[in-house]
Image (tube, rainbow, N blue to C red; front, side, top):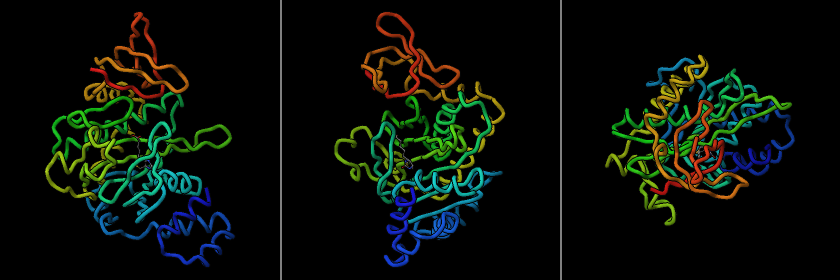
Length: 305
Ligand code: BTN
């Protein structure tokens, strides 16, 4: 982890090689202070003052760390989460050089997108944790609605779709100590002020961006404030165990329920199935060709109709 963070410092290009080798030898507390210090600066597009100006939250986003370029905001957030940061701390970067997507895939993160990770410390039953990913999907969809996208949809578990194309992905990771989950890192990538032509050719037909859909560039800082506000509202529902309300909001925007899909579970063979719904813990409920019902807890589903 420390090496990866050192790469972050190198990428930030604010420290000489000599200083970096000195940093390698300092203790972890001082090291995390260096990382925190670097995240205090404003970048060309992302500005803490602008985000805070419009932020109406109690705990999410009160602490912001903003970078020009990191390997992955989830990595930096994981590191910070182990080094005394508050619940609701947010790590944002203008670019990522080694961002992670779901199922071990990489994630394109050029300048113009919104790449952020939120550190959460929810005190709830662990079996409900997958619902945080679904809840985050709802928060992104509501954010899109607030900036003028009429009908964003959520493809299980967490792709936010506009007119059938993906505009946002979510990667939730747990930070555990002695088998106990200490923090949840919610990583969100929104294709905001980007052109589809900036993506690799193989991704272009399935990808869209807010800029393409709205025919204009949006205000990134305002978008971040709106998202953090929506996220806090839904995380509060989660803390209050209002799981059914979260599921209802998710189902209302589902892109997946009622469709025939190819289910691709990790380590399992692929099979076709009809999506009946989602269960109370966030699993997809599908009906296989032979009529049996199956719970899909993780994996992918490819829409067939
Ligand atoms: C997906 O595969 O759909 C999930 C993509 C998640 C990307 C975001 S961008 C911010 C955060 N940092 C990462 O490395 N990944 C997530």
